[in-house]
Image (cartoon, rainbow, N blue to C red; front, side):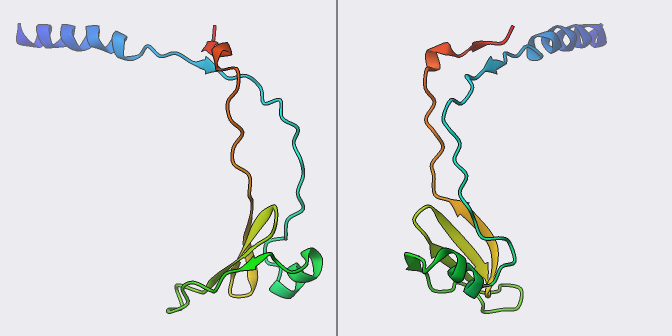
Length: 110
């Protein structure tokens, strides 16, 4: 009797737990702009030759152990470049995500 009651409780709760809604977001209508970025693996002198002197250079961080190499950041007007020793490991565009507009248009998908 206890097993039958437990099965009924679990089975009836399972149907309720599987219900979910999906929202459709409006398409981004902002124009996309392409910003040239340094290639991964490029050396510092090559980056400076191609993009000019950075607006700001940060001192290396880390480097105390072989498994923690020094990481350096250079800031340009539109992007930042991160170096491991003297090679590019990443470049990041300095742009915050666009704000959501027309949130009243959000509706459950049919």
